[in-house]
Amino acid sequence: MTASRITNLWSKVHYNPNRPVSRVVVESTTPFQFDAKESPSGITLIAQGARANMYCETIEVYDGLIEWIKVEEHAEGVVFDIKLNHPSPWRISCEQGIPHRTVISFVRDHLLTLFAKKVIFIDPGHGGNDPGGKGPVDLLEKDVTMIMATALQDLLKPLTDQVYLTRTQDYPLSQWMRCNLAVKMNAHIFISFHTHHSHDAAIQGTAVKYNPAAPGCASLARFTLEEIVRKIKRPSRGIEPDPQLRHLGLIPGLTVEPVAISNWVEEGLLRNPTLYRKIAQGIFNGLLRFWGEKKG
Ligand SMILES: [Zn+2]
Image 1 (cartoon, protein in one colour):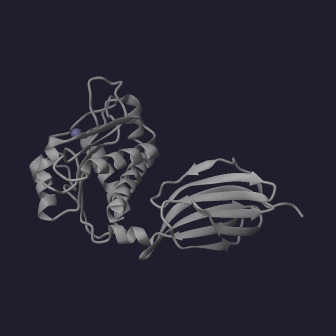
Image 2 (tube, rainbow, N blue to C red; image 1 turned 180 degrees about the vertical axis):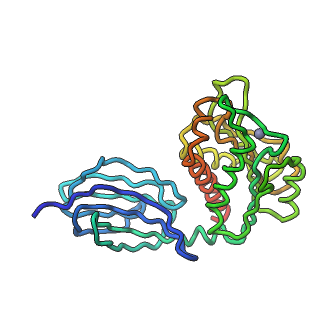
Image 3 (cartoon, protein in one colour; image 1 turned 135 degrees about the vertical axis):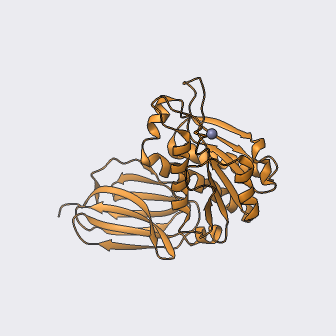
């Protein structure tokens, strides 16, 4: 009997109505016997007698529940070590076909609990006659901040119905107005998107600024910076207080500069839709650590 060959492994968040799950999908040439057990880091799945027709490496996921998946080939078969950041109910199912799919679904209920009832304000920086920074190939900051804001809104929408944008069209708004919208709605969080802009085109990387008046906001900034860097793999430019966010009072607020628009490499990255999804997921993971830690 020829061994089943593992050809691919991927993971995606699936938004079933009211019950999002993280799905890990193992694709193989034929079905295999499997053994799945809980491990100190999460779940270990063993595809018994199978061989790997893919690189055995660690796949980074960081979707707010699954951290990474380590794939190793052993004498007994192919071993998938799935690292979770939170205990979660799971189940395995099989989908017949070519390729054959073995699917592990992890319930993301604890994320619903954390984000439900949260009022989230997202602020696309600049707008209208205030374009913000301009890239070497003429990309405008006011446009990319809108794409960043929309990507984060799309990610959060399934978890809370109280996600607001300070502007949805191309018009200018004062910093005070932006903050005041969040204050009026008793926001739990205010996230403002910008890009760095400098005459020194060599400056690149991610920076996160925070409201110095809000307790714990520096750790929120640090978490968010770490998580964005982990996703988009740009250099860190660190965290610092942003006095303009003081208008928020005690509301935690961030000014996020994922990249520098004045750097030609990073301006190029801003033309790739994947970058925006990764930035949004990084911010999501930062919030998760902030709210998760507070609760515990
Ligand atoms: Zn700006």
